[in-house]
Image (tube, rainbow, N blue to C red; front, side):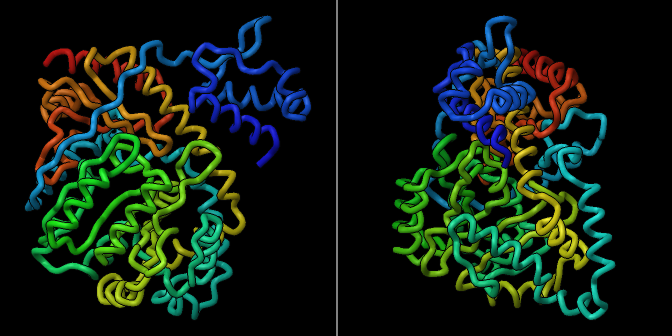
Length: 469
């Protein structure tokens, strides 16, 4: 990272945490140069970068000021209560009906599960694939099918090391995306009819997997900033025969919540005491805002109880379908189960990603991607404050590309979904994120596409539809 980029990130962190408030003047070029021991040109470059990210604005003969993105920001949602019993999961038809309606390319993609493809280095990845295929010996096409591309395994292990997790390569299993990894983990530790602790709200694919495997959901409420309610989790583990937990410890979908380090340690202590395996879904790990990456819950694992699942679909290569799991004590079971089902993800896709990770500038791409997502989040939050009626609430995640909105009680988000679709706007209604079909007045919106007049108009339309209930 260049010095001006590092300084820009330091100022962005001050804005994000409220140390520099909206409308407040940022340090002058002269003052910043003297205080931080950097040249005036470095300060100017940093301020130009922050201006392009939409965080500050220049005023003639006055200096730079923090942008007033929203004069009256929406409040955060409250934590939601959940039932104390287990729930049979039956949401697939609802999920499929929602997802099937999002295929029109002319629809404003607030309901999408992915960021804009233009944010990914797809041409550079194509060159990596061409290069890796030219260099691949014929025997490697077969040899790498069962074990995974050795260079990719090495790059993933190095990334874990950088986040404080020392892993043997033998613990890693390459999978066809993170969803296969999550499926395999759950199959290794449960039988039909077993109870699985999940978040509430939860990513809808979690619910579909439980439904397919005939497992029952024990919903644990999630705080919009701090993650799962650990007291409720402790009570459920004490009273119910839970066989596994499936949580997102950082940038949870749909809320964007992240557990702090103390909570992650406490969750691990709980599952260790009960000897309940935990499946950590960490597909958004690289999409954090700020300078410090969140440590995975896996970093506290000393007994192999945590199966940590990741993917390149959300941060680098959507469509390549390359994921992995660090399986702990279950790694060999996961590997064998994979060989009984899909055998191997695409060998060329693995080789392409491995080449890119080694030579393509992954960290440079991630910094650019994070900056774009942070700017787009600020635009959507400001737009919601302008257009949504009183009583609406919204999360403020420190990464990812989703916002979770709580709407007034009288709003039916399934009806709103259909009305918005008729206006050419997609959204994800709350009930698809709940085993008990709760969250009827909630929606998830995706800010992963560059902000445009079309997006602004769509937010204004949504605000009008919400007022109509």
